Each structure stands twice: as structure tokens, then as C-alpha cells.
Image 1 (cartoon, helix red, strand yellow):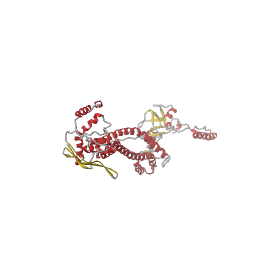
Image 2 (cartoon, each protein chain N blue to C red):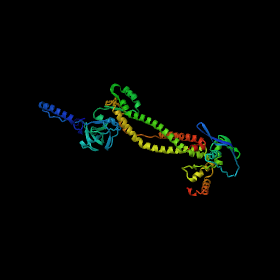
Image 3 (cartoon, chains in turn yellow, purple):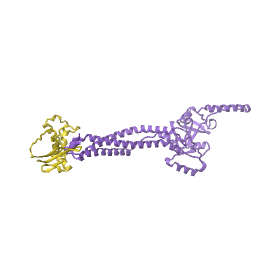
Image 4 (cartoon, each protein chain N blue to C red):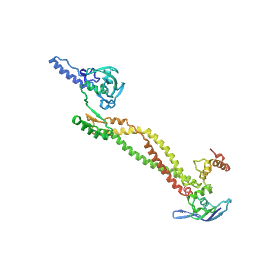
Length: 137
Length: 350
């Protein structure tokens, strides 16, 4: 369950403040596939960054499964990102000196998945998205 | 000693122009005397020098530049046998080889070794046990000179005072402290140069390592942002960058140590030779002094040419330690600063 209440994110540009997201409120129940649509520059990426705890809102609250993540400290935010969020960036953001398999394995490292399971799971995921040719030992 | 008086040996040194003048003068005198006394001219011959010693390991008291045994062997320093080492030229001139016998003061002396003394005069001389030469020349317990060698340049004055107190006016004591100090001036110069080089290279190395590490970490800001976005902790990010920089630093240190060991001696030789030439042009007190009792370090200048640089383990360990500390600081601080920033801000800044 995701509940957003009057979420605002402002950026400073010199003496000016620009609101990328302003007073957004939304509710997404569990097991729902949702899509956010809008014009370029309307604040979609900023909103997703706030929901994924990659950025801190200027005001408003975000509740995930009943927990207000905007009040989280650094360690709780790390756990939240590690365990609750899967983020696919606009420009991929792969680690350049790692293979495709290692890039997929990397988040599992932080969760503590076993070595054998990590590899099997990563290979399975690459297979499912049609990147089996990228699997190299 | 001269051939006709005390030894059967003939000098290997030609009289030269001085000798020829002497010969000519003696001839004229003798001719004049001959006119009066009917005496024949007497040929001038160079004397054969024999040096008595009880220490064959110190060349400075043997009137030789170096002592290299070309055949046979050295005698025991405290030997009481009628033996001698003779120079290569003297041996050739008198057809002597190992086991040959010649006479000194009427006694048979056996050749047990032939040496190369490093110069013409040394190679035309003989070296015998001190005790034997004293007996043969009826100068028991008498010596011309004694060279006292001290353990350290710092104790020369006190040793000099002690000898003066013991022997009084019987001997002239000349300290070679000034020349010894002169001889080690190149080392002092090298020490100063090395110290400043060390400080300079450490500071420069520290700055370079620090800046490189900062640059590497800053260039990988996006990677830090991604790692944070997928759940990596700040500690893990700092540890990763620190370990990476430590591996790089240790590999560089090993390479640096190998290059240091290889090039330390050639660099030292160049430094010594440069320092020697710069100090030699300055001259210095004590040069050319004759000593009845000489105080050590006479071969210090020669010893400088045999000097070797030794890279000790503690220096290597200190060097690595400093490099490691700088690498840790240089990587941990910037990675920690970047890791503290929100992932979106880091990636937005790219």
C-alpha cells in the first residue's frame, strides 16, 4: 500500500525556488500495477525518486505499508531501498566494470542472498528479459 | 736500506733525473777525489724500502695504495719467521718467486707472497713482520709510526688526549679529525639532500595520492549513487573504495620498493661523486700533514667510494604505512562525503 499526502519537492536555482512536484496526493493499494503519465518536465522522475527514497521531499508525507518513510533516518532509508524498492533508471546506470550477470547480482549482495541462489536467480532474470546471451561466467 | 749495504736486493726503481744528477755529481767528486786518492766513481742506487708491520689488514701504514696478493699468501701478523712479501716489480727485477731467498742484514729471508701495492714505489718495496725487521735492524721495540684507528669520529679527540697523556712529548700526535671530517662531508651533504628529498617526495606523494584518490572517487559519483539507490550502506561504499585504493597503493608501493632497491646504489654513487668533486675543489685543513701518530680515518675518502645504500625493512614499512594512511584518508573522506548525499542528488549532478 502506498499513500502520498501533499507531497512537494522544490529545487533552488539562485534566489528562485522551482517546484518540480507540488501538493501531490495519491493512493495505490497492494497488488496493483500503476503507471504515472505526464508531459516532459511535469515531475514524473522527481515523484518516482521521492517514492523510491532516493530524494527527500520539501514537504508532505509518503507512507508505504503504513510506515512514513519521510521520517526515516539514514539507516532505515537504506533498508527500505534495499528491501522494498526495485529501481530501473532512465539511463540504466549499470556499473561499467561489472558484467550483466554481476550487475543483476549486485542488489542481492546487500540483501544477503546465498551465493548459489544469487547466480541462479540472476541468470533466471536475464533469461526472462531475453538477455541470456549476456550471461558470461 | 740500500743494496750494497744491507740487502741482496736491487731496487726496481730507476734513479731518474735526480739520481742521475747525484750519480754525475758523485762521479765528478770521485773523479776529483780519484785524482787525489785514486778512487773509482761509485754508482748511485735507489734504496729498497722494507716496511715492518703487525697488521696487514690496514694498508695506510704500509706505504701502499692497496694490498693485493698476486701469488703466495700473507704472513701471520705476529710472525717470528724470516719471511717477506715483496712487490711485483721488485720480484721481477730480482727474479724472485714464492720460496726464493734473499738477504737482509746478512740473514736469509724467504719470499712467501708477492703483492701489487697499487703504485710503482709500493711494488718496489718489501713488507716483513715488524718483530723480525726490528731484530734485524737492531731497533727492538721501536717503531717509526703508529696509526690509531678509532671506532667513531666522535672519539678522536678523547683518544688523542689519552695518548698524549700516556706518551707525553715522546711522540708527535697529529689528528686526522679535520681530514676525516672533510672526508665525510659528502656523506653529510648526501644526508641533507636525502632528508630534503624524502620530505619533498613524501609531501608530494601524499598530495598526489590524495588528489588522485579524490579524483577517482569523484569520477565514480554516479556509481556511488547507484549503489546507494539499490541499498548499499555508507560503510560498505566507503569500505569498497578504501579497499580498492589500498590494493592500488600496495601494488604501487611494491613497484616503488623494487625500483628503489635497484636504483638506490647508482643514485648514491652519483650523489657521492658529485659531493666529492664539490668538496674537493674547496680543499681543507689538514691536507698533506705528516703524522707520527695518525688518528684513523685516513682511508675515509676511499671508503666513500665503496659505500653502499641499504634499504632497511623499517624504512620500507614506514613508507608503506604512510602511503596506506594517505590512501585511506584520500579515498575514505571523499567517498564518505559523497555517500552522505542523497542518491538522486548525486545522479542529478552527473
